[in-house]
Length: 76
Image (tube, rainbow, N blue to C red):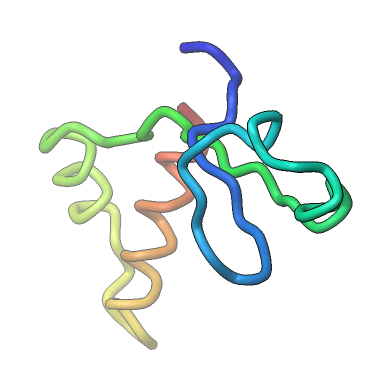
């Protein structure tokens, strides 16, 4: 995947065209925020089931399970 912006944010509004096409005096470059895509980090059903089986069901299990899934996905 290339590391090019897929859109730009300007004054809280989404713009899909490249800011190099915009008139510089109309849209100062300091106000333009590039937006990027990143690859999705997903877990297999087996990985999720393993996390479920390892859960400590005391306390707040729903939150702990959600955090465990996020941690595992970030490791990928």
